[in-house]
Length: 324
Ligand code: COA
Image (cartoon, rainbow, N blue to C red; front, side, top):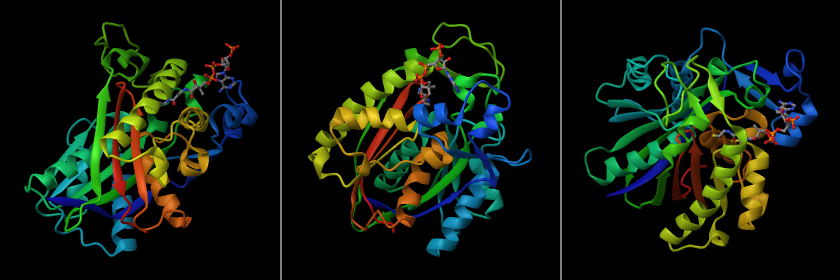
């Protein structure tokens, strides 16, 4: 059974946060942030605005822009590390607020790899013949779990959401995938609300995001470099054949290091980090949508999505772009 992605929609909150915002309460500068991360701006949700609100708005934007009926969606997958609450799932809230009558609904937790894992799961459900039209959303409100006393992390993150519809199709455009995990690194990037140890290490359970930035950086460069080669090999293509890469937008400098290692020009790397910050599960759809709006991405372009993050875990997929 073949599957394709037929539409995309995004949402970002109204409040724009520029780098100068941080200069008033931590020892940092616009120059340091731009040079080390590439980030110029990010968006923060209002105090009463949560992940489910952004998911609903991204999906309504998708429906409006691509004239998509939401009524016959039969499964909803929301990738997020920042659900409104552990239960009910954000996906259940989306079902209710969008009046989708006959849909299964789950949230998945694989941090910045969540959106790609959602697409991989949707592809599998369609291939198995049990589902036909699946809404996959990546959304996070990282500003609500940011430790604003930690200058090494607080400057990185932003809020946003991106939604796609994965549908049964005559011609397949979702090809082979890669997935992998190094759970030993759980303690190097985490968000804990209980004192349970992670990978046998004690954690700070204050519901804020903790990160060992250098460890993440090193792992990401190594893993992504090897991962993209593996993804190409599994699809019988070369990296030169690929029109655009959409990696998780963690940090522009990190992406530059990966693409330098792979000898791929940065023009082929679509990012959202410079204008949205690191938005975790939302970063790939934000970059994808922006590239469509900028007229960069064309119908039939060969693209590779690859998400990576907390776990540590990663997921990638080779796609022929079917949305403009
Ligand atoms: N402003 C100014 N100086 C800062 C700073 C800030 N916001 N944050 C850290 N520094 C300082 C450090 O304290 C350190 O100072 P020191 O040399 O006096 O000790 C110096 O800058 C260098 O710190 P370092 O941690 O080596 O910086 P870096 O170049 O590795 O950049 C990150 C830090 C967090 C930007 C970088 O490690 C990174 O992006 N890692 C990956 C994070 C990521 O992508 N996470 C998401 C994964 S999904």
